[in-house]
Amino acid sequence: NAGVTQTPKFRVLKTGQSMTLLCAQDMNHEYMYWYRQDPGMGLRLIHYSVGEGTTAKGEVPDGYNVSRLKKQNFLLGLESAAPSQTSVYFCASSVSLGRNQPQHFGDGTRLSIL
Amino acid sequence: AQRVTQPEKLLSVFKGAPVELKCNYSYSGSPELFWYVQYSRQRLQLLLRHISRESIKGFTADLNKGETSFHLKKPFAQEEDSAMYYCALGINTGTASKLTFGTGTRLQVTL
Image 1 (spheres, rainbow over the protein chains, first blue to last red):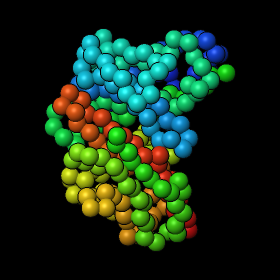
Image 2 (image 1 turned 135 degrees about the horizontal axis):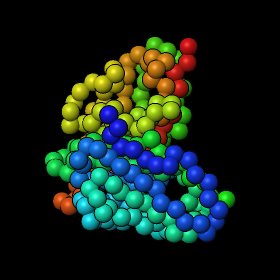
Image 3 (image 1 turned 90 degrees about the horizontal axis):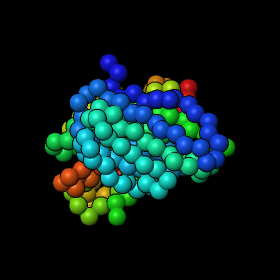
Image 4 (image 1 turned 135 degrees about the vertical axis):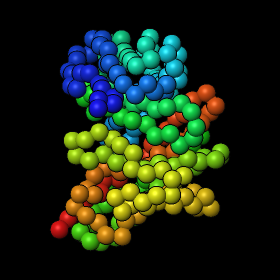
């Protein structure tokens, strides 16, 4: 049972490089989310999507772009990586209907920007 | 704006001792509270949610709207409870469902 799968698991970039993080879920969830986790700051929402073809900004969207071309995939892009984007990135998904629906998380991607 | 506060970065207790992980929130609407847990080398997972009023792995949490708190409690700590715990506030805007997380508390259970 894969659930939410993130690729890659680790990556080191140089400042100014670009890359895309992939999140895939096999639970037919409508909602998908990208968070970053930094020491002492918990998880902060970067962008989210309420369905295929839709995206919205979260708490810390600057420097990131996202796309949801297929329901099962949610891509997070860094166009020009900066050291401040060194973090652990988590993807999550959830069903859309009703209250108190839990989010299901991936294993995370550890990204270092030199 | 909504906020979740977990005042303790680290809570260290002895095995068999009671545990209380504190969580306070601020939100003008009707809150939905969750506790998520991250064990070593595992993904973040839901531990419990206030609406379920259930006990999971011996943990319980009661929503106190008067004190705006959702503290996580367990009467007798076990070694396997050592993990990172996050309190989260759920918000439904009608078009989306989002979580605001606290900064987390690391629980360390020692012999």
